Image 1 (cartoon, rainbow, N blue to C red):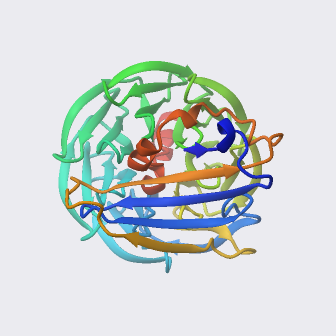
Image 2 (cartoon, rainbow, N blue to C red; image 1 turned 60 degrees about the vertical axis):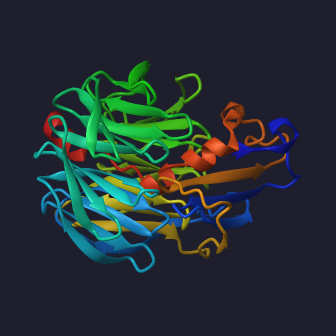
Amino acid sequence: MTVNANSGRTLLKTPVRLAVLVLMFATGALLLLTLSGSGALGAHVNPSVVATVPVGSGPSGVGVNAAAGRVYVANQISDNVSVIDGATNAVVATVPVGINPYGVGVNAAAGRVYVANLNSNNVSVIDGATNAVVATVPVGIFPGSVGVNAATNRVYVANQFSNTVSVIDGATNAVVATVPSTDPVGVGVNAATNRVYVANQSSNTVSVIDGATNAVVATVPVGSNPFGVGVNAATNRVYVANQSSNTVSVIDGVTNAVVATVPVGTGPGPGDVGVNAATDRIYVANSGSNTVSVIDGATNAVVATVPVGGTPTSVGVNAATDRAYVANQHPSSNTVSVIGDAATSTPTATATSTPPPSPTPTPMAVGGIVELVAAPPDSPRSQADSSGASASAAVVLAAGVAALGTGIAASVWYVRRRRLG
């Protein structure tokens, strides 16, 4: 959520950005993690790979729990999930899951990790505290992508071969709805608006699902063979990687219209999209060129291209540390590239806590990020569409930029390889 004084226009005369990560625990205690700096908060001046982490065979999906500092990598060939400590870039656990795990979604508020298993047609639910599978949920055929709404505790799974999206209740681990789709391969969620975005590969469209009704409320034409979907809840923008047209379609979440098309990558094109809502940077994994394109969300321009490992397939982002995690699936790699900025220090983080305001318990943790942006009146940021700011602060604190914790990682390189040769 972007909050500006003076009717959403100017707060200060010089650009300053402040991001606050808010976690409300079951006890009611409030933890604020504040990241501050001049210009775009923590935006990489010279983004580059600052670490390379060996993982299992065929790493495909990446999910991030920013609150816990953990990164979850689905290893498609070795049928497990590598758990990386974001502070040390070391694998601290390996969790066996189903057959050919691919997409990973994280609910940081509930401490749950959801892994879509392509060839066992189910979702493994991992307890982030114990790194143990606590439930296995049957879904449709060939589930490849997972999106999570931490505010509603709903999990969305794209089942490509059954042309459906399964909606899982995170409290019961039961499928509560099945939404028809057409060749769905990617899922992104905007927790602030309760909208779900599904990339439909063969129809070159994105379905927009109302999370309250589980009904498709819009269908948006995009590029050729759309795969990964990333959402910036702070700007209400949706980013769709179009593999065959080597572009990213930028959708306005208010109008459900494509407002920009950004060229990226070469060869077999972009697969997955990761979004840093705090810096308004979008990371696109280009599997054919072994690079990651970094897009400035304010200008819709590629501001950097970062070489990574072989066949990058998925990107997860930790907005709190300003790190992007890229799964390199090629057998010569089997690694995760960590993108940061070696030229600048990690954003300063300070934590403060307040006692519970009342003894009334809350059923589950909720998390969010509030972004306060100040810019000159004539800057692109100050002229940006402020319609997304109409959501109340309470909604964003509760719903938050859920992508901060989820790091929805669901590009489908494996599906692309099977479907497109």
